Amino acid sequence: MKLHELSPAANSKKSRTRVGRGTGSGHGKTSSRGHKGQKARAGYSSRSGFEGGQMPLQRRLPKRGFNNIFRKNIESVNITLLDQFFEDKAKIDRDALISKGLISKRCDGVKILGNGETKKKFEVSANAFSASAKEKLEAAGGSVKEI
Image (cartoon, rainbow, N blue to C red):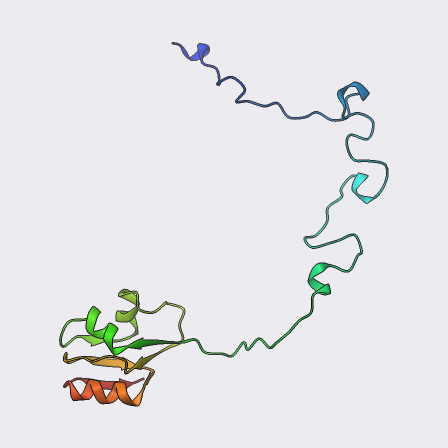
């Protein structure tokens, strides 16, 4: 086989439709643009959501509620998860929780909740702690630091 003998597979190459080449082609005269109107003109383009002057769907639908742009996304982590994912005497902070996949990078803060038990001594630094979480971590011999 030589380079000049190569050809694409049968029916794999489709030629583009050439419009405006006579009535016999099926795409002659108006070249499939219809009669007159904005879409028949050269240079026509419409923005997304435009419905030809009709009230657009986005404006027809009712708006409800309030979007609080100042809301903080605080993620919570239970003591049971700390006990499962971290070794004894581990230093736990936001970066450590992200690396273990317990919280997302986009969160604004972390709150440790007291669901579960632990016997490990953790050094935990977070934005907030529930009263029971603080009590359980200190009872196990660990330390708690609020950022």
